[in-house]
Amino acid sequence: MKFRSRLNIDLSYLNNNYNFLKEIAPTNKCIFMVKADAYGHGSKSIVNFAHNELGIKEFGTATLIEALYLRQELYKDQFELYVFSDIQIQEKVSIECYLNQRIIPVISNLSDLKFFLNSSDFSHFPLVLKFNTGMNRLGIAHEEIEIVIKLIKKSGRNSIDHLMSHLSSSSLSMVKNKRNLYQLEKFKELKSSFKAVGININKTSLSNSGAIIQKEGLEESHIRPGLMLYGPSSLLPSLRKEHPWEGLIISKLETYIIKTYKVEKGQPLGYGATPCPDNGMIAIIALGYGDGFLTRFQSSTINYRGHKGEVVGRVNMDMAQIYFNMSARSDLIPGELFTVWDHHQENFLHFAEESGTIPYELFCLLSSRIPRIYGLN
Ligand SMILES: Cc1ncc(COP(=O)(O)O)c(C=O)c1O
Image 1 (cartoon, protein in one colour):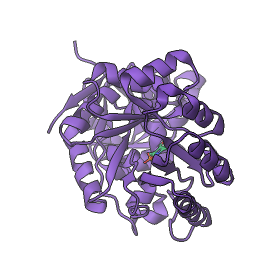
Image 2: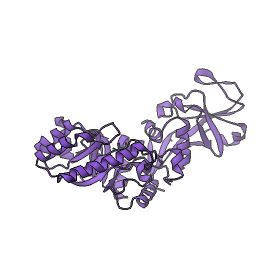
Image 3: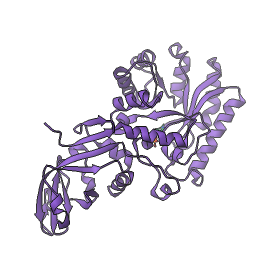
Image 4: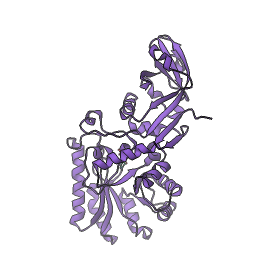
């Protein structure tokens, strides 16, 4: 039996995107961000390919559970895994996981830092600190640096293995936006303050996709790309021309046309009986909100074999209505493949913008009903 809808992931595009990334940042080491099941693409296959074929040795997850899954599914200890958000290092069961599976917590508050430095379990573990330089999400406040210095010195350590911060606005200009300039400055100050008191910093990283595309933060040892490796630029449309990113979407979202029929302007369509906008054709596709194709996509457009389709009426749990004008009639055939997005970045970004969402969310929305199918071109 054929799957009706699927996400076809072509890993050769990940290879291309990584090569493009290397052109921008040839010397930086890379922590490849694979949070949220590799941005919805399936972390096991993505990490396996990125490690074996692209030689990436460091990966970032959001939670310990995500990291544990990767350790268990893939070879032990051959790559580093960092947990960025939900680290739970003060829980006994988590400590065992960190120690036994060699997963590295990114510490981003004083309470966890004290616990880490006082625990003999972690005495040989790399100290990885994330500071808040202005994003105001996670991160040790940069004003707390004196306390951090005292704690590190008291613990007998004289180095930080990796110092990080995260940018709030890298989709905006890195050289004009005040928030970005402020964060860059604060990160510099942090590095100088540690150096001034004799605390060595072995590795540093600041830049995510938006900053990397703008070639910022490349003086640090590491970069932390996420979105760009899956294809899309994370820059606002107004910056994309000045800072092009040639990434190819690594996935294609495909479904099937279940049924087609002729409609008249005003004819009620589906739940809510939305009046059809004009005379034309409706194609019912086998995707709905149960798959991650949301009601909010109503009115967004999708290109099908050169015809412009529009999501009309309320999206159902497992179906949606796409309106076409009559010129599409001969191309709309029940049983035919219907591609929602393909490897072209512009189409994908356009669909995200029209749907009032962001590329990150569009990827992560796809539910477990959609099989992820991997191939190599
Ligand atoms: C700490 C950190 N670094 C890097 C990234 C990657 O960001 P992007 O996907 O915009 O490249 C993320 C994404 O969530 C993150 O939280």
